[in-house]
Image (cartoon, rainbow, N blue to C red; front, top):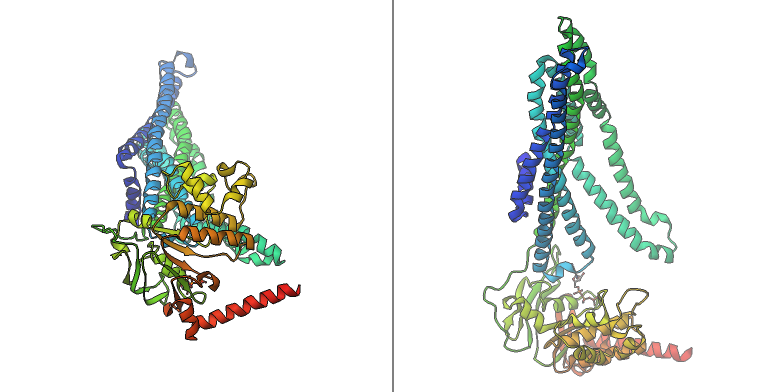
Length: 594
Ligand SMILES: Nc1ncnc2c1ncn2[C@@H]1O[C@H](COP(=O)(O)OP(=O)(O)OP(=O)(O)O)[C@@H](O)[C@H]1O
């Protein structure tokens, strides 16, 4: 176990790169500073011995000022060396944390896009940031302190026996007992506490986020606070663990404090006993040294206790990093191929989400010829979004292939693939930057004119007119919020600016008001001009006039053809179309009656 922990620490240090040496230098300096810190105690002993040798004519004692100044210089040297040590470890720690952040983010960039679907952004940020904070604290403070904590007692043991081995033995005894109490506190039932404690904190913060997110639902549905039982339970479980730990440490902590502070209780009778031989003043000088040094030894043990946390923290930091690293990146093509056209072909594609029992797509084959528009329709959960997501490699297929212009998407350079496909999601995400920058993201080299014309094509003119600084208005700040339909039009402007030959559209007009909807349809039409389009349609009216329709149900293509062909077939699509017409008639009838 110790080996594993050590290797975690060295794995962590591997991120320091060239700065690893600086960390080592910092630790060496910290160890040296700790040893220098012991010298003033020796000086005090020398002063006491000289003074007591000429007692009561203390002023005649030789070298008092010299030892006094020596104590001061060594104390100053100790501080200076420790300061230099911290400088080294801080520089190395910041660099290491930065390298770890880079490594984490670089790995994330290699992961399939599907990894980021769902609500993982907060969680990932927390892992990367917490890890960096943990690493900084560990390498900047805890590691040099750990070195000092190990070096000082070794030097202290030597010192303990230099002046009077009997009093030294007593001090050592109290140190060993204190160490024993500390080990008892950290072992047994409490072993692994740190890890459990971290888990409980994570659970509690996760539930707290859920709690805050759920407040509107609770208010709307007039739920009671009991709906947040999970949050309450998480707090309770954290509090139980912390109290349990505190209670289990009672005996150990009492013993520990008694030992490190109780050395006097043993030193006084020992000194009285030793001075009975007539060498009282010598014994008194030794006693003064041990009386001052014993509490310092207690402090050292305290440092060992806190510094040993650093090993656990290294474990924790590496474990968190592993959570990210264990996600396998998408394989890169060794020799990327260039597509020879812009048609999309699915050949016998089977795909299963990680951990899912059933495949979301089961032996699906279809082709969308270059420059044509295909509509994907079908019942909810049938696999439409999954099929669309396989084109820009949100995930890789389990078997079969997805091809663009005859080339498997897995054999294309990732940048090339991203240039080929514009993807418009159902839930549009705009960044907290200006509308201009939000659109420009699609093509950073685009001129202002090109961006304005994309915004115009996406029917954004009315949005830009009402925004306080027009296209330069920053979205999401100072009360500038866009409706779902407006945000989608900005996203469409982004896709239009990208001007990719293939467009994958997840049509979601459910939340748009009729006026917005008409504008969005116009923007769609502009975006689709001359492109190969795969459009997921939630309302059949959208795909009525497209070149071909694929009806997907339970992961398989059930029907394919034009609207007229499918409506005449009397199958699933015909039924869906009938239901759609009925629903539309019912809606019109209802509106007419009002
Ligand atoms: N990220 C995911 N992880 C695991 N399973 C998923 C994930 N996304 C979708 N699924 C499952 O895959 C199947 C197909 O889902 P998909 O979203 O592709 O259907 P859809 O036809 O687009 O549905 P809708 O019209 O409701 O958007 C469903 O059974 C769904 O539960």
